[in-house]
Length: 157
Length: 254
Image 1 (tube, helix red, strand yellow):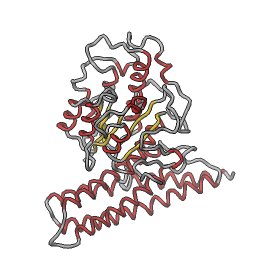
Image 2: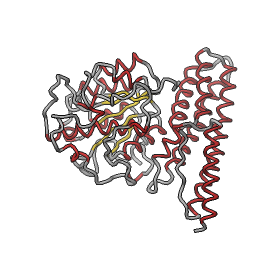
Image 3: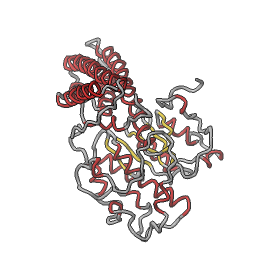
């Protein structure tokens, strides 16, 4: 094991994950999820977030169809979709996605279709952005493990 | 598979049959939790949280499936479900079809399962909702997103219940119907952060999903005659503010 390479990668990982918290992509719940991962379940976090992103994709699709026709919007259905999205984003620590959902819910309540469409677009953007960022993070993890190192514990509190 | 994905698990090999037919008999000391949540992501997370704290878990996606699992979906009580051992039911509040509250009521109305503690989870911190659930007999109310410290706390209380119901039917000197388990630690009224979780450690951070723990052994010396640890002293009655403290945990969640 090349300890210099491992140390460099670990440092890179640490800096990257801290930046994700600082830029508001992730919140404390993500670190809670990381606590649940260990040598026996090294892919727990990536599997959960993968399910979350699948969820995002499906819900955004459904909501998009509900919002399609201006004269016939089922706001209850859209609200239900937002509620689910808000819940799962909260459970994985996807902070920005969750925050958009809060505004999104408001738009549903006042039946603002334009507002809903904007929020929908934003939620789509945010989840895809997070997906890319986390993919980079997980790649770093893999590199560390392949170089024979361990993933650093990062305390963000 | 013949039955659909009402039961979810990351590792398919560990999936349990929803029909209530266990593949192997459960160890009497093992804590079995039935988790109910319509969100797949939340089910996976709660399942992991419970497994990491040494519980055996069955996760279902609706109140109906939960009733089906418990054998409560028929009018007549089913004899085979007498032997089904469920030590805790943890359910989401907001679910389509049957809410967690409705599920709670049905469980409390059943003869087989009314003694099983039911914990409600919700992403919304609504006092009236919390009160309603507690009045209907819910053991505890957890604010989502659920954290490891929350589940560890539940697990601590549950172990004492299991120990008491397995061997020792004595009640506390107090008049409370439920045992110590209904009280969260009476620490600061605000955030119960992971750092301040009860000092009573039940070495739950094992790396595999079925550790050989016997946490009940820690309470072998007259658990009822003295406080077990600082956090579980019965200083207030169950109706009082400890649950309000629970509610106040994360005011800024929404």
